[in-house]
Image (cartoon, one colour):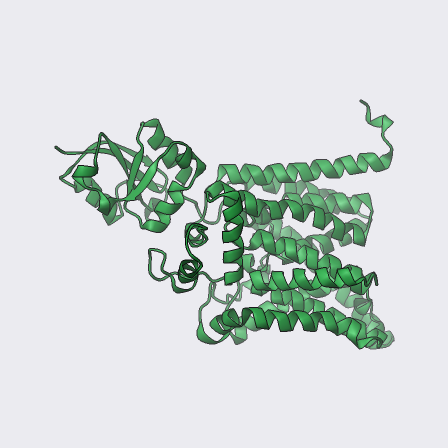
Length: 496
């Protein structure tokens, strides 16, 4: 079939479908290729649907997850939301990933809806979708056991209905209802999204000042969101705002050099290019507005126009401003993953500006760069993830059905709930529970070792004391020692 038979609009649609399909395949490839973070093990242990709600609460808030110290930093809402979802889809590593991945896939549809509210220009849509689909930071973070994928989905949903109601003036009651619910859920699952909600409120304030009509129209929905959020989350608000004092990342003034861009776009080089383009257009925007302010009334500045472009920019600037203020006044939240909702906004605003530019080389340069960047930095993970699946495959290849580990119950629960372990009936126990009367034939002892953190990329020896104890245990006959990154796998049998 020749493309000559298709009208231009159909070709455009097919092109967008192909980009989205590639984006979905990339996310699946990442999911199948890489394992999980260390703190993902804790989350998976916390959301076990087979325990009581009180036990879930204990694990979430009081750190009773095998280590006795680590607590979950995100609200309880997401913990129970995931727990009850896993009751339906099944409790396994893969089921949890697929459940969270659904929100990433739905986000493509919402992203398209938001983008086409701005412009239906094919050039703009192609650029914005390529940037969105190939963004390494989104691909990596949306696959983690965190509220990230749900937050992106809810932020797009909230933004979409905000635009429909307050910019497109399509103020149907059902739209107000969806906006309130989606925004409330977004804030409840990820409180850092309050920075985005502040951007909504600032834009509404500007709209009200310019139009000076219908006070309730502009402030009723945000007021309902605030009241419901406080009522539903007062326990978490008390924990974070009053009883807790912690910082994930120290407030580093180098932030003012990169503004998270090197992380947001997957590398220093591509992040630097995008920051340069963003800064250039932002300075130009500021210059135009200052010149206009000098020549005319302040309220007539282009920056205060009630349109989607300014809505996007106001939210970007508000999120950055709120991040800086909170980090200085209260505690540092200077971690890029806390503000993932910035990335779609930055991508949209940059795509608008680049598409409007008559110089095509910038447009082409950005597309080439983002594709090459995704290929080149694909394996450049900020934090290495121990290859847990590889451990299971090795043990099964050795025809072993029982693994003893030197780790706590959190890791054992994680390792034993891979579909591969469930299918092959591989049990995972603690090494301290190993007793002679329980042993039949050979078994595996897995020791989580950290040579990459201790001595670079070498595997010179058993740095972890627990690993050394296994090797020196007089009751064990070590048949084989298999070394893979972060793990030592002892194939052993009990001495008779």
